[in-house]
Image (cartoon, rainbow, N blue to C red; front, side):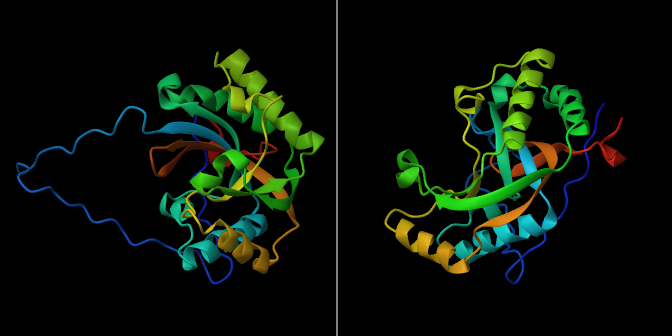
Length: 236
């Protein structure tokens, strides 16, 4: 069974990574001792293929996450143990009962692509998501980045027999790095100002790893492979 590299601990910029307090398990009144918790709803999770950044670029994005969290504008990305990334693909959990079936295709793709230059150059929020409080950093859509995504879609279609969702098909995909997903209604302008005051953009770096993660609702890395096929724990 293919295994990926262990998740790297995210280094923090701007005074370190904001950490949410540990969750405390509680039992509702009247629950019999030892009763199992109710299962999560079937639609609660999905899988994502993500492009991770080099440590320096990751830390720059973490500065944005931390700044928004300190102002109580957004902390969900931190709370769910996510890492800064570009989402290359989302798949509903029901479409992927065995996520490790993707491991060979992801490892093959990573082995033949060198670390990918990236330039995050703008801050935006899609008009359709303003009420949901979404903010993201947009990378310059280079031929190398678009080519990586197109190869991923083709590999998953041919090798894993998966249909790519409409929003992630090569002719529809818009690369973006989330910095907030839950800004309260009425505080979007404040969030924009906080991020602009950081003067992070433009910022450059590299895409270094392709990872498959489960989001349900916290993020759990399933496998991760370094671009360039540098081997290590990701090999069989």
